[in-house]
Amino acid sequence: MSNRIKKKFEKNGKKLITFITGGDPDLDTNFEILKIAINNVDILEIGMPFSDPMADGPIIQESSVRSIDKGTKIGDIFDLVKKLRNLNSEIPIILMGYYNSIFNLGIENFISKCASAGVDGLIIVDLQPEEDTELHTQAKEKNIDLIRLITPTTDQDRLNTI
Image 1 (cartoon, rainbow, N blue to C red):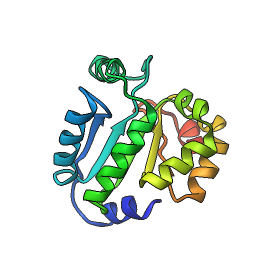
Image 2 (image 1 turned 30 degrees about the horizontal axis):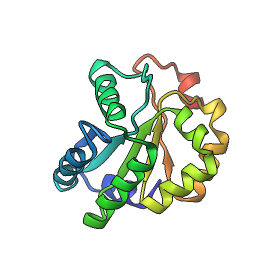
Image 3 (image 1 turned 135 degrees about the vertical axis):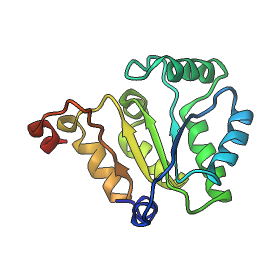
Image 4 (image 1 turned 135 degrees about the horizontal axis):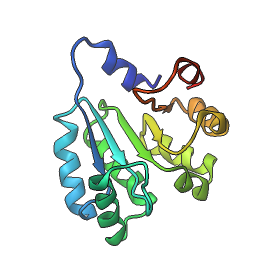
């Protein structure tokens, strides 16, 4: 577990984790929103906008569309994280998105950029544990957590795999 995430969960009490799509409604406004968030939440989850976010509901889908329509690229998300890290070195930052964005950039390149920017964790909603070995290994080498999702209906066998 990344040091910042682990440190946050070692403290007793409830945690507020906030999700904000990177670049929504535009990069400048988004950065202003994120600046407020980093000092008022326990963990910040930033969405990497994706053109077909089918695992998300309509609100997150619409935020991705707005961000992409304004020209947000994955490099912009890394830049946002770097700027936030300069303002707050303690808050855990997690990127959430889809594997195609990572695959297109290249796993090694993506993980390197995450580490350089100060990313603590990744949630990749469309990547199954049976297929995440390379990403998991490289992320772990850089002390970046690969956070897998479960559902309330996940059975015990699947839970053990995840």
